[in-house]
Image (cartoon, rainbow, N blue to C red):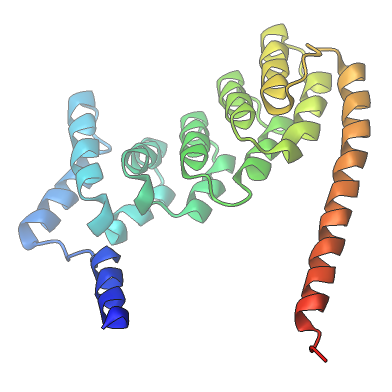
Length: 225
């Protein structure tokens, strides 16, 4: 009886499959998609609201919008997904980090930071070396500072070297401090020396952990006499 009760609880906790859109909803979604390219800002915003409300059940209609020829539509689709991130495909979003339109790149970066898929911070950190727009760079630096992923520290330190804008250098320093707890400001040499020493410590810790896990597996697999 206990096992049966557990099965019932699992079934109750499992998410229900998304219901198909009704004909009326399909018509509404279709009209809203058309309004995403409207020159009327109010209509675009209303369309985003409607699509966000139906995002979970309208994935088949929404996903192609990320590849639309019109950058305004791609941008609007990302705004829809920011309202309903559980419906977004992280891989499709990451691909838009290289979009030719700056608004699309910024929205894709912010959505990826919302989704936080495995390895997202490393993916976003690659923008530090290739992104030309200051607005996008600022969002990248802030997101990395809040990522709790110390593996992006080298990319941020490199950004201190090639970034000439004092405001951006200050933002990079803030993110480095948020990640590491160290306050070296924009002193590139000190940050490099600190990371060199820290990286060696992290490598030793990783090696020790790997050895302990290996020994644990060997002990678990050993047959008792």
